[in-house]
Image 1: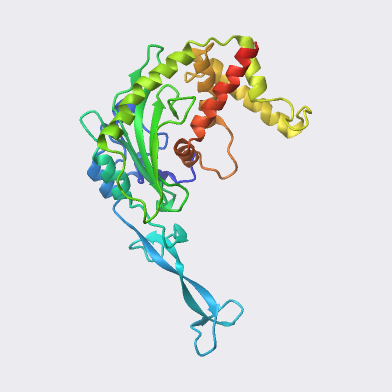
Image 2: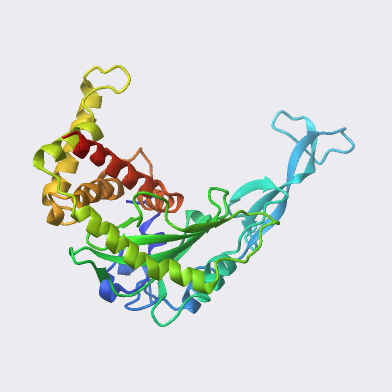
Amino acid sequence: MSKESLATLNTNTLIGHTDRRGRAWHYKSEFQGERPNHYPGAIPVADVRERLFNWRAATRPVAVERPAPEAEATHRDAAGNPVRWVVDPRRRAIVREEDHEGTVFGVFSADYVPHQYGEWLLENVEHILDDDLSITSAGVLREGAVAWVEVSVPDALRTPEGVEFRPNLLATTTLDGTLATTYKRTVTDVVCDNTRNVALAERGPQAKFRHSRYEKLGLLSARQALEVVYTTADAFAAEVARLCAVPVSEAQWSGFLDVWVPATDPQSGDKLTGSRKAVADRRRSELEDLYRTDERAAPWRGTAHAVVAAVNTHEHHVRALAPGADRLQSNMRKMVNGAFEELDVRAWRTLEGVLQGS
């Protein structure tokens, strides 16, 4: 689920190629009015610009209250003392350009430059679109603080092992300082309905640009960006084939779970008890269910691919989150910052250790 309201998700996100991919989990036609946010085919660039990126971020001076003589005071503070506003020349606030009472996205140094969504996410991505690539999703969340555009091929590719996936190029940035503008290769595993990184042993290709006046807009060239998408297919297919060729016995799967979800405290070595044991037991049971019965992993049961898929799917869709946490935004951040690929790497290395020791 998401902290964003259904109304927000149905108006501030655009979902493309639903004739092939289906609807998003948050689809509610009653919130969309006369303009659905789901598109049977590609999302037009003009719609992204008009519906999502039709505003600009602006920098505004930051002022603080300072004690002042009575004659120079402009107002009084909470304690009744005379004060006046003094502008801090070293700080700038980032806000919507024409919103006089809206959210302040963040306060930064004077060198911070907001990356406009229309330029950094849309115009740059527009340059790499061709007959085989199109915008498949876009959105603005957290009251405008985070945005993304995803470019992909419309049809899923299938490996000989039966794993379906799509190579994507994700362009994303924020206005609250939580993320540099990032262009990253991702893979959506349609069977698992989640995003996996291609190379389990190393980070996937990405380019990051800081929000600085010294950072230039010159991004990946069109040729480089296209290569990021198209070479992903071969790399992912090879990785799936490698994992599907690694057999995992029932004993090895059980051994993996013993290491991945230990029944003892890693610090003291004591057996878990009480609530900690209950959490571990639930997590192990959830992974067992995914591995044995869930369509996102079970068809490849008995291989390394099923083990990694079960762990990845659990992290995306099943693992309990902290109270108030937003799974949609959490997943997006993990996809961009590499947390999901690090999870895959850790799962594979854990399994590799079990296989070598058995």
